[in-house]
Length: 327
Image (cartoon, rainbow, N blue to C red; front, side, top):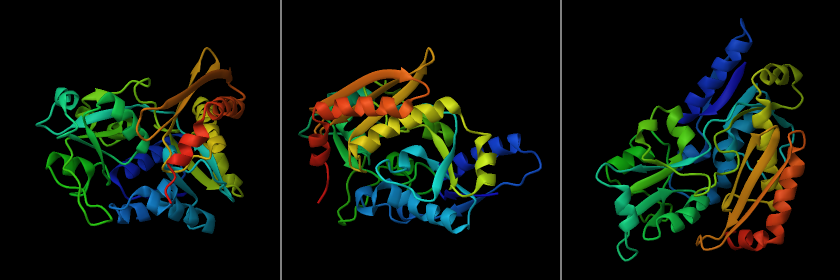
């Protein structure tokens, strides 16, 4: 079985993890990774919104290879998969057990978190991120800091985010005007763990401080919906509770018609045999944060997602989301 993946260090590590799980479940079956350089990997300066969002930047080309039969399946980070569009001909056949969903702070060696708190907007320290969700939360956590557009793989090259942070390098942008250098980054905790860099974590934000992106910390494997053999093989590594949580979270994204530039957050857990889902929509300034929380049966994740999304809409979520759409 051939499984497609991006060429970043993190994506390769995630795919190798998927393959190890499959090998444990299917002795005697050969699995191999097939590496793709996606649009988002080739262009690390443009904003993701200009590349069709994370879906257009990191997912579309690999999906096309699955549809054509060049690949049996593809590994994705669930948070990279658009939640507001149909995917004809494809199905997520496996949701692997979720790792940490939290975000974390990484600092340049000559910086401290205390300095971030003391930063003044007149001469601010700079925190790198591509996420409008993270940027919105950061405005309330470190109000004197400035968030800057920051792209690239996490590790693995002189264009990686950690390399640029550690060496005080500027971030190129599509306009030709570089920004930075960054004093700190906010990254996904699970991603740093995957690439062996968890020691770089200075602070892990609580879910109350920074609610994660929908699907954060979840690896999925997608294949053709008309390929029952591959679906059956992948089902052996599917984690039922993670699947239920993911379906609840992504229903929020679907109902809100969330796009790549939307500051939408959500996280679902299983507690006492029930699903507990929290979601939020915020303004780009971080001054307005709408939150909704509810619980429901494990067997009805989408219904729970619709309930939480409906409350957010009633509170004005659609207006906040529209404000973030770029012309």
